[in-house]
Image (cartoon, rainbow, N blue to C red):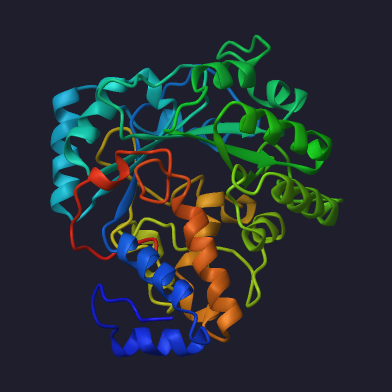
Length: 377
């Protein structure tokens, strides 16, 4: 096969090509994921302390994040904050809650400023399309089947309702922006196939998360981890294009293990680099996401990390994915390992409708780009 004529290969790329056994296709895929990563630098933003449901096991409310700060309600104030973040070198806003769809005007302020925006939503309200065409929408889902209502369909006053997953499916049917983030659990093994099938038939995609029972003494303790992994891998084989998560990641998210070590605070890259508690962690030699901060809803307080700050209870999917992605050197031991890393990287970017890996998104190729080093790789 002829080498690419787009530009000459660098010495480093020729070394990668040699490791890949001369497989030019995988080298081009490597170049693509690393080129994309150079355009993306992320931070996370809590834009509201409010939410229209109270999920069991939600770290935000279990650990009183809604009470820690007073949210900035001025849209212009949020826009000015977003501009300062852009000046700090951030090009990608990850907007979580509370519930971002309750404050679309604040989301719009980030859309006006950032190149890339993703929101995390419970799916009860639909993010409008007009003005938010390029926003990736990640829809939470806990357990699958009847477990989802049991764990999530709870109003702020404690009243229970039904049909939350069905509502999310209706709100985002065929919507190219949408990707469900399905937190699997051993209590819901029997629901995995049917849940993924319904997402497939709804014209959406899904990636996997792991349900940490934050309201329990041992949130990560399991009795049937091998069965959970086996079933997730079986369903991945049934719906390979709909269920985006790579088999390597599926094993890692359930077990917390990689081929070189365990996930935990000492290696997690998704922590706020400006938080004073991390001085020792930043000095331990393990990679972190450059310039990443997790901001509270007052747009001035830097939270500990991308989730609860209770590291012993955490198996967050995006944190685990970032851990794998920033650990490229761990995958250089063989061509097979490197190909796995490339495939994991592709599965990560496919979650987002603004990324060129999303075949459904005609807007993906139209986004602005900046020559910045990603904090995902």
